[in-house]
Image (cartoon, rainbow, N blue to C red; front, side):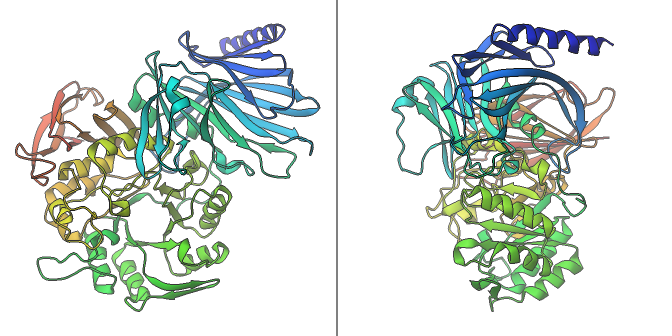
Length: 631
């Protein structure tokens, strides 16, 4: 009865405000608030959190050339839960208040939906019938304070920032390809962290990926996305603003997932997240027994054997398994017999993932995915598609129709929220994957990408190198171009596989490298990728450190990295009361050094309980891991 009464009173308040051309909607906890006003036919919004104005006097429009009138408003309260096929949580709460505005753009009717969550807001237009005379474009301004700080992904380069909002007008890029892109991260001067992005682009045909610009005339950051379709009735993607007190909580914020369309795949039993071995970075490596890895059956049998022995779900075969591609035709390489590899993997209980490089020929996606299915592949790693939204949308749908997981590489479209709608879209390289282009990123760059690029969703970053000295010495054909440029420790490599969330954790080293440190590899082996019940970021600071904890059942896995080296106090207050736990520590050894002695580590065990504080000590560029399980 109280809930019904509240809804009635809130609705009356909204209509009362409407008379003064001002509307207001609050989050369920009453702290986040969006205030709308219609100023001379232009709809503007203000965003508040706990009475602090975060975004001021900012236009939102779908038809900028026309004046808008608000015809009616409606409020809805939603409180429900849903279960992802895979993800950082096994259950997600979807609680929000939604304001629906019926709009008239000089004869073109539309609706604007505004959802307010406790940790974010989302905006979407639905145009009911648009005239051919007007060109729809989703414009959204962000009136941020001049002293707030911005960070942006930069493709496979280190992220852009920090840049003060007041300096955006003078920001210059090194190349024409450089730009501000989602997800933007804002350190607001009101001691809040915001992320500006979009969600559910996969459900909005006619729209391309947004990017951001600074409008010098309006003195505002803006996002604008033209509608390129003849459809008269359409929806836009959701524009999302995440709000958090701590930077790390942006990574586990579920607003972008909640506004995405629910799962469209009826039978998801074949969609299994997990770990995969990968051949590409191992080519040319010679083992102690004199075997040299390459593109051949014997190499792949070794990967498959190790995967089977260590409960690794997948083995990924990268480029050069074929030599020629034409429409309806793929010529396999004479270097290997793929049928024999497939049979061997099947006997061992290991699933195969197979690469495809679109630059090398056009097989035609309508035939490509059924062909991969006929080869008994479980997934495709799709390279060099580029930022082609409609192309990528179709690839996700068609791969799902052939029961194939899909991993996009090489500057992919960041379809935020797509793992809810099409959970076969298992991961993407929306970052600089470790050693990609035969470069190696620094510990600082890793932390930046883990805190910025990862906000949009799962990342395929290829962490987990164990034989760091061999890689740095150039003992692989595809090691870093510059020797000794891979700066990390083996414990940090383990931690990175947990910190960076993905439905597919691709580990890039040779089986022998992992076997030589089997006690350390245990952490990766036991880690249940993508099957998490709960995830939380314990510590995070830009350019400094990240510490992440994830729970599966009663067990916790914790991974931390530190750029400068130091100690993080990790409180175990997330454990259950009156329960003792065995904790295994995987740590940088005292003599570890990310430049000169990267493979020195130590492992020890102890007994802990709720409320204990662990001193996680790391060298510069190092890491720390914990596996915690009930006694």
